[in-house]
Length: 123
Image (cartoon, rainbow, N blue to C red; front, side):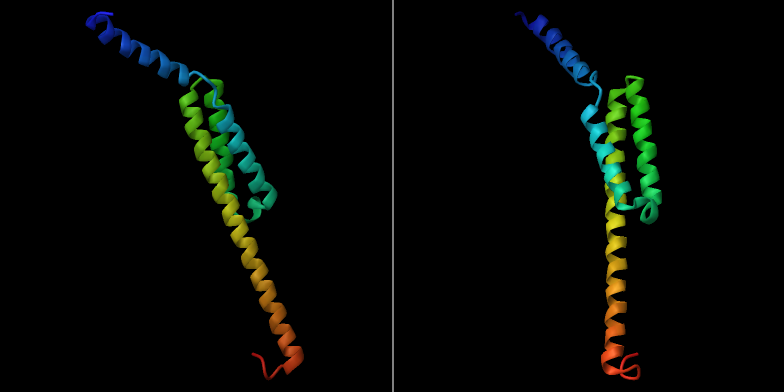
């Protein structure tokens, strides 16, 4: 192969390879975002992290639309952002649930202390 054909052929080959990579629907990214959003919803994100859950839902819808329009690079980026938002919603939901459980346990401990020591001993 001459230097001229190598210089022109290699960039063309790279462009073809990159185009092929971007020409596939981001199925795994969409599935991952969908699964994470489902986990967040099942954990109760609608109650504890509604804003983040809604944002993840909107991003996932935008990712699906981009994929349908064959804008696979955009679709993958949007799906990845949706997954991150859903993960945040899940984390915020779990944190709120743990806090609620801690408060419940503190209330139980206070009530037990009052029963054992009398109301004047515990304030």
